[in-house]
Image (cartoon, rainbow, N blue to C red; front, side, top):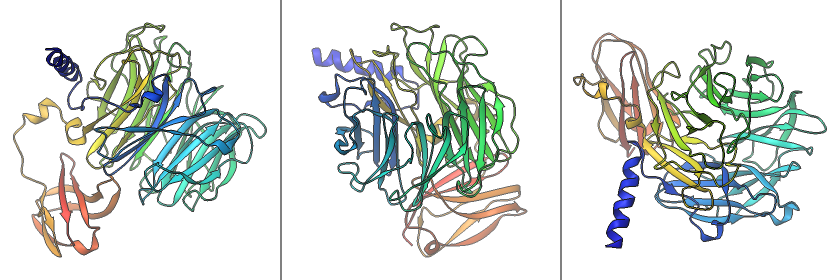
Length: 489
């Protein structure tokens, strides 16, 4: 009878999460970490592998950063400690993690405010090697990075000595770095790269607002800082920084940060550019629930152009140790012009067992799923990491769209590609764009771009495409279609 009741309780909790999000999976499963409040986190996805690193609220007296991995797409995790005994400093903070084009895991750990180190793992984080110091001068804080092929780009603030926003670049998978100052101001950095390999940097300064900088040569030179918005931020229980995020797709750049200027409580603010960062619109509140407080917002473009935002929500303001939080999610089909109504990503609402829940938690995607990770205190006395995912195609749906009659396909192509295959394009359409992506969501090539006056057939040489699972996505002014194919070459 107890087992039946336990099953029904779990079933009821799972139903409490909004579709299409999968039931939340606990990342911090090791009993060794049940006495730690796991905080700000970062993770990376490569195929069925998920790699996670996080901070702890006890970071000043516990010489470990909890690292976790999953080799089954996030259905379950194993967690092991990460410790660098040679660093001479036990105070780990602001961890960042990503995967390169070979599937190797790269990790950045900040040690107190003294220095940052890069680590490389070729076995999914079971062992680490090629330790490299990223910065030349002490006084580092709030780093973020981009890992792209063999290159790594890092931005952070220097808090002492040559203060300001600094940038470091590696072109050899992190074996060596070259760092320099790009701006004299100080603030929280957010960094991303678009498909044309332009770097976009957002900075929330500690004094006078939100700024934007751009590099078209992979960080060798930068544009002058552009002031985008003023802000006001007040810390409260659970959050203590106006954390920002930046993401880009095509010519659209989208930035978020946390602000108290409008309703007195926390709001997740957004601002967008549609010309690659040259000009910007007005800032606006992203969250659709205006009561209580919203914090730790994070924005992310998937490879198909869908814009995703998630954030913490609480009905309380100001917050306290009894405030209950949940994770909310919003989808924009038009790059931030409008958003679907928010949904609930977390299975339950929860309290936090520490005033510090970390300053950031993030979203990632590949060609199939959107992935999310965050911390909450649902399990009793300590905060733990949780993970969930949802199919991109389901997140982009609305009920009204599903009830419309099915229209003719934009294109047809065999599910199995071998040698030369025929792809049929159905016209007429005023504008048609067809691109190929791999399973990790990276652009492979463009198959067609332009107008189409009549139905036509094109021959595709499968040997010109990488083998394995591919996604072919077609865009017209009114519709988007995606086909999953297997290329046997």
